[in-house]
Image (tube, rainbow, N blue to C red):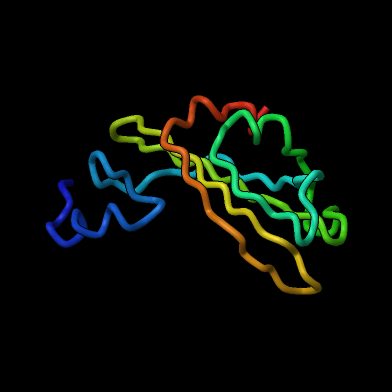
Length: 118
């Protein structure tokens, strides 16, 4: 079923909508990571995939993140229509019961980030 014009206009502004064909994307993988080398007061933005390949360590839940250490939630999106992949990394610092969001980075070439799901 083709998208209505309004939906096609909204697609570029939603993470879960494909920017190629405007369809809702599946998100088959979600995972939580800790960034052991990044502590409170020492946040540094990175956009290089290789940095994340070396820095991220998987954890089961927020309770496994050491105090004062940044973490990252990774979500993979996959379009069932055209096959496009993208990965969104949301970097945050858990502070008591709250989350201090630091940055969100989106990689449109999901194949380079397959190591996240291994």
